[in-house]
Length: 501
Image (cartoon, rainbow, N blue to C red; front, side, top):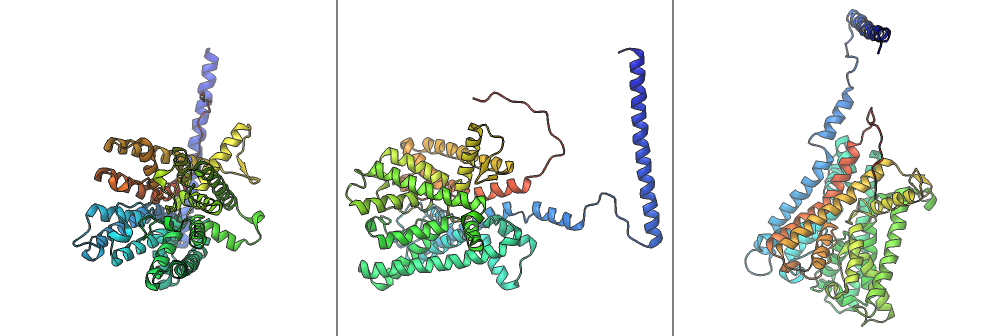
């Protein structure tokens, strides 16, 4: 650089510095005049960049102890601890003495997290009091602990504070704070209506169709209705619903309760509010409904083809169709079975891996990474294959934040399952395929098993306990945390294109 260029640079730099100094001086002078006028008029003085009080309060509420991503897991932990204590009481165990602590912990976690895995036979190992505790636990867990607490608070105070709305919104995944009240009321109404209707039909069929005493039929009907709607999968029968494999009067109400509870309360709320039909529903609702229907039909067809001459071989045509449909529904979240899962073909287990991992709808009683998450990633792949810049679904552009959140939830779930399966392999000598089935079933809160749950050593059962807890509250926590942490940056780094593939 020659001397004239260096001189010009120094002149320009000096001019910029003087300009900045002058700007600061002008700003200070203006602020001083503002302070003088405020003092003369008796007004209050506010710093030029002070945040409004409401914004500071809201920020403290989001990041402090009332952060919903922290409250939801703590509430579930408290419910599991309480349930474990109740199940360890002498009156809860059918035999003399108390239940083992690990059995109580595993059962309480499975009930609160609406999973359905069990290390003992629910119908014979637990007393009527113990079974009542289990029913209460999966009712609370499926309904939503914070949702129930919010409704109780609403009944007392007749209003919801902003902090309470934020917590309830995190658990119910309401589309907006203004929807929280409507979603909560709908959850209560749908829960009572579906469970009462299913319980009445099941009780009548157990009593009239299968000759059970009225008291026993009533208890079995209520237990299975609540278990089905909350997608818990726990049964008072040792073989789950195998004894009713060809009875549509028993299986159809159970299937309907599973699907209604698993589709997600935001979808039910929107279908109730927007009665104009498909064209007026949001992309979330349309993806959930269309994706659920596709998975139901595809899963049913695959199970029917693979098990036609196997576990379905002893049934007629109607029994085969009913059994395949029931397992396609149950495999995605519920955990009831009418066929011997342990006797199924390995290919059918692989189909179950996919159905269980995907799960049901968001903010319902279902588990898995959720239908919306899976199909959003499918739309991303489809757009990339076609060379489209925007990811679209049903003539709507999908936000980049939603794409990244779906990818994060799916990859974290896969990574967790990989580590958990490796841990189970290290702790047992069982084959990989059955351990993977058990791990996915626990993480996706499904509850189906090939029959190895009770055989696992205590350390492996604790791995499943952790998977059930993370699977139930982890997706809520991660999705809520990602949504709350989403904020724009004031700068962007230079772009590069790493080699992919």
